[in-house]
Image 1 (cartoon, helix red, strand yellow):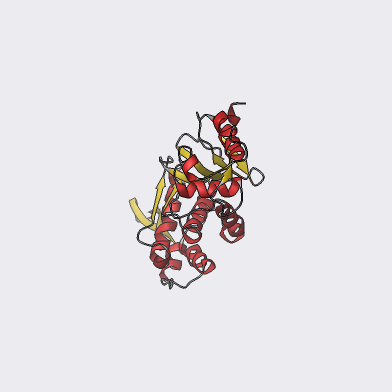
Image 2: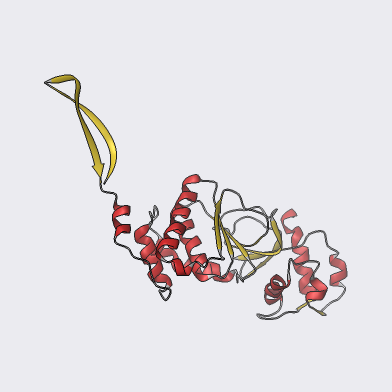
Length: 261
């Protein structure tokens, strides 16, 4: 039980002090959590979500309905072990779910949930605390989850959650999904994702190479690291490729100016 109010009721025999009545309600969240036990390492994503759904306040009640679409968005980012993944959102339940799914379905060593709303951040923190309590084997000790008001520097993959975000803190080669507005990069997959371009580069020199295939040694000045080049090359050329035509690289570089048009 938890107290929600205190009422003073005047009584015929005591007009001055009366009788104090405390009003309680059942704390359903606490009652649900008491019945839960930690899950084994072999538990599946649906099993983890089911337990967390009982442990966490879900203002939007959308966990079961949105999982497939959210996993598809995370998958489109092709997040690797060298990524720092940021997730944006204004809905408490959805951002909490997306953050938990990012932990469960990606290999990102560092995840950051971003919201300017303190209540949204508190809901995400509650979900991550429940994940650590009831599914501790699913969040390895070396993986970090932060909940912040502003996106930090160094982010290389972003699930924008349908929001318009700034690219100022994103490095060239960073990938953004589920965004609105315009970002200075080359869009792929029907404009559902964009790879941020490197600005201020000599694009003409790259274009002059025509269809020559470029590898890491030729593009290292444009992309943050080799792993992110491999991801970009996969979009520019073919999945799993480590080289891409110079013409495609030049097209990506020129996309840095597309929001200025």
